[in-house]
Image (cartoon, rainbow, N blue to C red):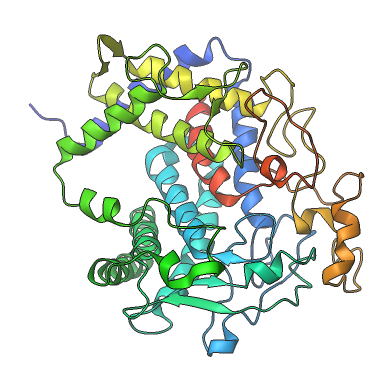
Length: 440
């Protein structure tokens, strides 16, 4: 007899918890450690906020910024997130970040305990902005605030920024299927998160998601073709938009085939193994911000393991059978490496553990806080802080940076943005990953 949805959820939760306990029994970290890391991974997003900060802002060294964003086009684009260490609001990584935050809550919200409300607040900060970007003007999606080429010529606090705050959009005349579709995914995923706690908001998110997806689907084109140098080489459309739109109309079984192939490519010893790992065991994809691939892959691995476990299934990788336990162990290896179980004994999450990066590539963190130094620090005057050898005066708690190279080496150099810059899209999937391992 088929289970009711509530019974199924209970059974799945028990199975996941049992699996988790087996993995945790040989861990270098306790559930309390993972809970601490979870709290800090969410707190990080408060350091990336743009707009007017709320009274409950916990990272107090930040101040209001970007309050007139959108005014040059007579629209309100205040809010949202700075994606990394600069002061530009890029729409594609913000949408991806929002999607992964929502997905983290959907899959592992039951394990977040007292951090669930903070995770939802971080998510809402992103969706509130995306709603503005999608509804300011009919058949238009605003996808960026700030000229990155001008912004990168300065080293200044977001509270001081005086570089052009140009706004960029996609529309039927200048299509951007990739960024619009990702924005639609973010809004739709968030609508699931808020369905029970805030039904009117959830409905608004879903209705807007459908309108934005219609823009993506009806007017096809890569947004980097429309916007050129203001999105490239920063966040170019490398894979295009065709894959996303086509995958959405395929049968579920084809999703599983694609997923199995990807998972098998990560498993050492599998006939389909294609991944690269450092000598210390870290998944390595690229020299620039490698940990973005690690956190996202770990999230996908854990999510897949969850569904394999709940259905009593395994993956066949050629002649090898890969169980959910094997996948959780692989993800845990990556998590523990990031948190400090690595050859350098360095935590790559700022503020976690005894040893973590002190000189990260981040303007607001590296410059004196506006609360300690109220005088404006102009565009070129801030570079003295970029090149200084002293630690950042403001700790961006919870930030996960780009990480070590393919030999496990890390320079701890603020000017080495490839290794030392944090980003919202590194942290977002890690929220769900840490929630899984924080179960008591």
